[in-house]
Length: 412
Image (cartoon, helix red, strand yellow):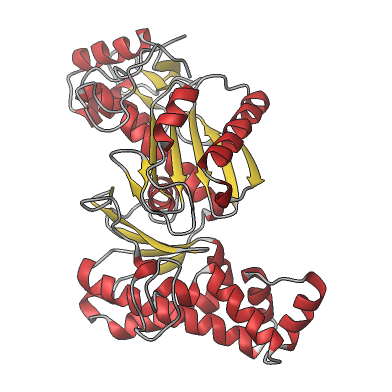
């Protein structure tokens, strides 16, 4: 079955039906009529039209509510969305169904410094592998996450600090040409925030912050249920907020950025220093055996009571908390979710962040403010990428945002 991309839903009523089915799963025709606010005859017309076009399907009878029997419908079972999450050291590619449930996933190590052609070529090879494993030959849409500033409108990275050769590279255009479907590209923390909104601990919150602490540090800002990107797409780049004017030089060229104190590279730097100067016997032992240290080593050392490692976690949490306290006073979020690779440092990190935020922000802003660890882990970005592109695709045909693909019919 094929559909013409760019005319998925023909009107806002159809778009709302498709989003309800994506978010909530199968529902009866009667329930959809109530949710959309249409008469029984009108909703029947819209659902019949969606069925004729292969976008939804009937899966059985509904429980009778009196009168004519109703039936259960869902998004067509062969709907497929693709997510491509390019991280600092890995590429994750996954496929979901129309309800954004993960059906298959492949992961490989990558090196961003090889440049965009090599990394995107690697991603396309993984997509080929995923197609073979999952049986998904065509995609309704694809979402891409990149660990750096992105012009969402243009689908290109903009001066990403540790990604030489990526500046203004046509990432969206390259993927859409190869895949033949709509493609959207965004900063990785924004898609992680969308993943938390769709299926994570923040599902019930329309205004929250998702804070990624990993190789870089950033915040996804969700307002009214949607990601706020700012005028040029760089809202939430808190990793390059100055926390000490006399601090170390950051990869962005400025001095004393948060990321220069507690990003992945900074934590590794401090761990190696502690090992080599005799401040941490445990880290010194790991370094002598493995030849390198990671955030996982710091986590394990802290859990074992190593005072130098505990100090690194507390210091990093304190600095993150200082930045978040300012954001809480300014934005007044309903929740803060902590994720990313260094979130694995766990509750000792979380406790320090909470302590600083609760102590430094106004009681009105923090009285009912949960600060929690992500429950989705490394699936947040994969789910969020497909949420992003499905939001775009499942919009009435009058939509004129980025990457509305007008190429030929493509299946799912």
